[in-house]
Amino acid sequence: MITLEDNITQWARALTAKKNTSLSRLLGKLLKEKMQQKEGYEIAMQQYLSTPATALKSTTENYPNRDSLYER
Picture: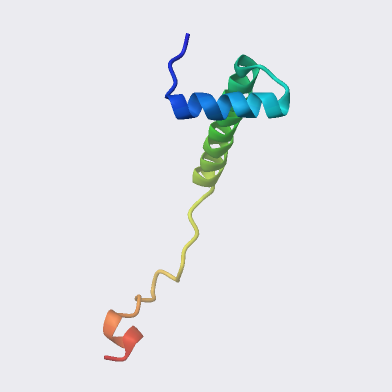
């Protein structure tokens, strides 16, 4: 058994009627989608973090200071 707020229950009932499905099936589908999104994000993050860092400038070059960037 799950407990839902009244407004969520009404929304879910309307959605299940519109989709001609059960609340159990709807909840299962929503949870599966959420799980797949999270897994997709984690895979993308792991791929990004596994790539070597890229230098933004050569090691002999200094970054410009704030005053020179904004002509102060």
